[in-house]
Image 1: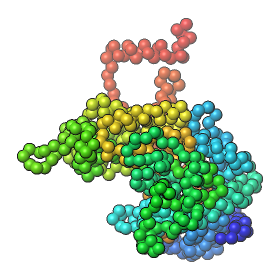
Image 2: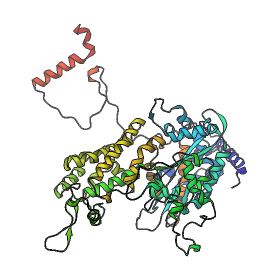
Image 3: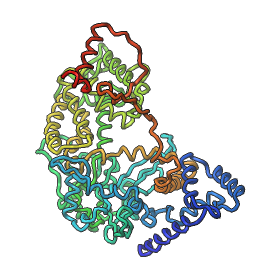
Image 4: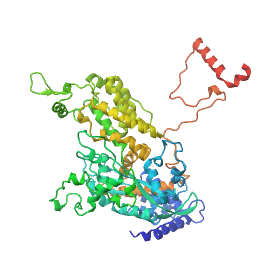
Length: 640
């Protein structure tokens, strides 16, 4: 796309919007414009999930009943009106007229929130409430003061994730949704991701260098808005695809870099500086390692094995290094706390419950203990007169009776509405397994339920470090984070992991357990975790699946639904007479609690169930009377 055409296209869309807004719905109609009617009607279609056919029939009825009204005759004409004002998508190029960045600052409702990071940041030293309080953000502002001087400039986080659009996990199909890029295909792009990121990177380069002229509705002024990519937020496989550092093999950790041997008999690893990373990537800029990605015919259709002595675990130089500022960003690729917590909890829970397929306590793990000559009490032992060997019961797993009691405890958990899943349905009928837990279920299990269950069924020297690990994740996810707490947590994690190494077999300590060590450091660099994890994007995948009406064209259905939803979400902020997501009541709307004029009887809560009449004995009645008479300030003048 020619960037010089953007201003003219944008102004054409604005003029068309003004023209539609001034068009009467019908002659002498002064309370609703044609565009207002169209926006409300399209909002009802999306909110009620009408099909295109039913929407066409409604429009045909309206145009027949009201022939003088300016109403489109079909869904096609309605979409065409929307596309004339810039609310449209295109294949490959997704930032049509920069409408996605402009929407927030041009809306009088959201324009003030764009500069909140500059006006509402935490003033207390050593506390963080927003990514602006992190070291990475502060260093970026210090290095680029011209960019930081304009608080309305936009800093982006890029999220990439794969999902099955059909909801059928056996169907061989996968898509990756990144900002406004939808990449179809039966397989993940992996290191070929840069091919699909090309239009996005080109747009980011232009938005950094030239910016885009836009209007601030809050101050009613025009300014040039610039955009910078500050971080990526991904699960571990996507982390490898975007960063270029392979997450497999003996050097899976990109932070430890080449200091990550499988047996840790070396000094603590150190985080490489940006200059050192660029030096490692320097060979990829030359012809020696300039090869085609993936299974290229030059390599016989097979992946070429990298030379670890030259390349380390790098598979490519990320396309993001084409951005002028990317090499100076401190925290480029976030470790996703959601997936790390989920994987740690899953490994721990399956090992505790002795899950046959998913437990880390496997037969091979026991044989390794014997090869290394450690933990002889866990070695495989003969089973009676048979030649088969059996695993002795470990002290870090529940016994059969305790496993049933723990599952009964989980089955009986009741949570407030909207707080979490119904755990009653997660436990199997025989009370031996807890399958089918989602990421948020593991989040609740790790931070709320395991600390209680472990204390009841395991010895203290085993349960104590596990509970401390659970409490660390709970501390990490708070909404106001202290830097000193994270510094202390890093020291405590060393002791926790050392204690766990004395309890579990080496097979328990995979890359996810290893990455926990770096979570406190990244919290200080990037800011609050709940603004840097994958929960919002994972939940958005469910929304995208609901857009699919034509299973033969899932990408088109998702793109159509996404554009319509974004456009109508923007417009619905101004539709006061229509129930939208911004003005509809909560699902659990509490009626007002009646208040009493006497202080001691004023209630600040409501009962959770119907009350029962109870007859008070004389002693209890006397205590209540004493409390009321001595705690009612209205009676002070009489007591004097």
